[in-house]
Amino acid sequence: MSVSIVSRKSWGARPWNGDPADVPYSKRSEFFVHYHGGVPAASTGVAVPRAVEKIHIDQNKWAGVGYNFMVDQNGTVYEGRGWGLVGAHCPNHNTSGFGVYVAIGGDQKPSDAALRSVRALYDEACKRTGKTLAKRGHKDGFATACPGVHLYQWVKDGMPAPKAAEPEPAPEKPKAPAPKPKPKPASKIVSLNSAVKPGARHAQVKELQQLLVKAGYGPIKGAYTTFYGTETQKAVARFHDRNPAYRSGLHDPRIGPKGFVALQKQAGRR
Ligand SMILES: [Zn+2]
Image 1 (spheres, rainbow, N blue to C red):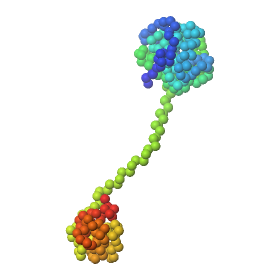
Image 2 (cartoon, rainbow, N blue to C red; image 1 turned 90 degrees about the vertical axis):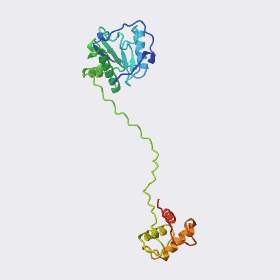
Image 3 (cartoon, rainbow, N blue to C red; image 1 turned 120 degrees about the vertical axis):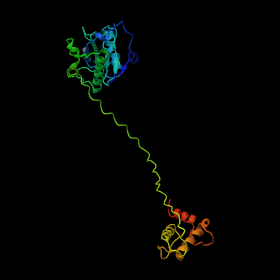
Image 4 (tube, protein in one colour; image 1 turned 45 degrees about the vertical axis):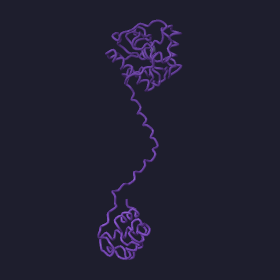
C-alpha cells in the first residue's frame, strides 16, 4: 500500500517558526506512535493538523507540528515534519524516530482506516530507510500514557493492518430491457415443385392446402390431401383474386412459384 500524504501546503500549514534540521534516513531506526492525550478538538479533516499545529507553535513554541505525520480517523495522512526533518515528539528520539500522531485521545479507539494508514507509513518508512524500524509507542521512549491503551496494544501486537473493507459492489444500473433480437429462423420459405399443378398429385399439395387455409383462403373441403383438386383450385383462385399480381388470368387456379412464395409469407413464414 503506498501512502498518499496531504502536504503542509494542502492542509494550510503556517510557515515554519524556525528551521527544523534535516535528518538523513541513515539516522532513523525507530517509529513512534502517538495519540492526543485528551480528546482532540478534531478527529477528521484538515482541522486535525491545524489543531496540532496551534498547540505546537502557540503553546510549545516549536517550529511547527512536531510529528512527522498525523493520521485522522478517516485514515487521511497529513504531513508534519515529513520524511526528512527532525521531529519534536519524543525527547532523545526525535532524530532516530519518526513520530506519527493518531487523532484520538482518552479511551477512544483508533479506526481501522487510521491503523491501516499508520501501518502503511511504517512500511513506507522501512522502505525508505532500508531498515526494519523498531515499532514503538511514545511511552517506550518517555514516561507518558501516550499512545493510550488501544494504540499501544496495537503497537505491541506488531501493528497489524486491519483488512480493508470489501469494496461496495457498484450499484447495478437499472438496465433498459435489451431489445429482443428478432428471432431469425432460417428461412422457411420453400420453392414450389413444378409438379404441383391442378389435377396432379404431389406431396407438396398438402402443404399448399395448409398454407391457403392458414392465410385465410379456405375452407378447402376434403383437405388435406396430396391431390390438387377443385377445392384446392378454388382456394388458389381466391388467393389470386386478392393478389392479382401473381395471377395469369381471372380466377387463376394454378399457384405459380412467386404466388407460392407470397402465400407462404401471408401464412406467416419468413
Ligand atoms: Zn505522544
